[in-house]
Length: 401
Image (cartoon, rainbow, N blue to C red; front, side, top):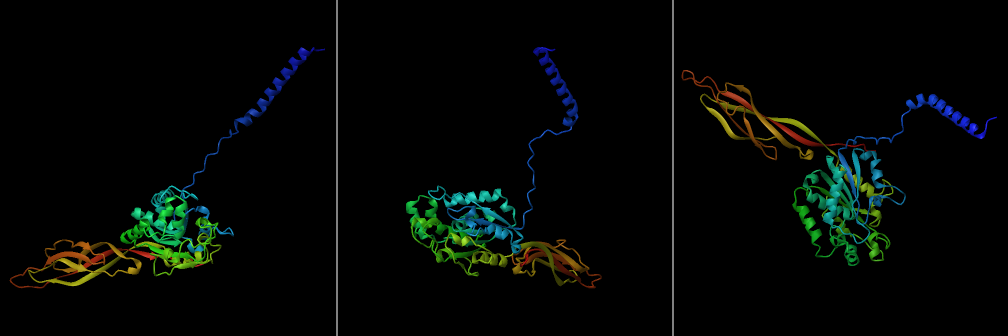
């Protein structure tokens, strides 16, 4: 009979044999089993941008959720899923605007907004349109004035409750709150910021062709909502004249039966706020760039014996369609149907310049045949052909439903 020490040694040897057997059995399996590692992050190519992007820009004390209605409807998503606007991307912009005692001015926030849009590839779209609320409309205008290259891509701005002439609420709120934005939005007669902004907008060719369409609120804001808290009473945050000042007269301002906060929270696509933007969008469709060729031939150019027909500035027009924003990008000239030409100079004729209205200025010259035995046997004849390369913008019609 084994003592306790011998029993322990036998048990130990048995355990080692079991471990060795397990290793032999499972080693081939382990050799073909990958060691778990952290999964690599998937790399997705950036989606191809659509021709146009719709950019939402919230107002004072707002954020990305400023566009959500009480029933949960989110305006950016309503547009994303609207087949009538399927050819446009949607961008929801955001900038820092704390509920009180902010530190940044409108100019600083305009630069911040531009930087964020650049980081999100907004300016890579050929067309950009803005849907702005309140202060957002002011920031968009200031941003575009400071960045004319990007402004060239902007077709139109639709502003909801933007205080182009300031707000009484903002003036009163500036007494209690040191946020510099409240001074920028004040309706005080000495508000140099808003006055200069409008003067600059009208005076700069880089922006004054951008259409501005406006909507205004018809209801007072409750005391507990937004900047209404400064008065502790119902108040109209932005009045009619301030909200519509400087906007396009071809499209009447749209009244929104809501207060300043809820005017940009449409519960569905049938609401006046949504329908107004859609109608503006439909009336200003995406434009497709096209390049076409058109020519004009000036016939009947003649030169008799030992005569010269030359003109340093023959003006040759081409018809342009203003509705398609047609403009000449290049023009070339040549002599065609020619008979007995001599001494063509320059050869070929030269287009020296093209006027904005499509008139090409052409320099040409040629001589007629020489007399033979003092007898003129005919004349040189030719036609001048000018070929115009014309760019135009053709409206792209999206599905109507």
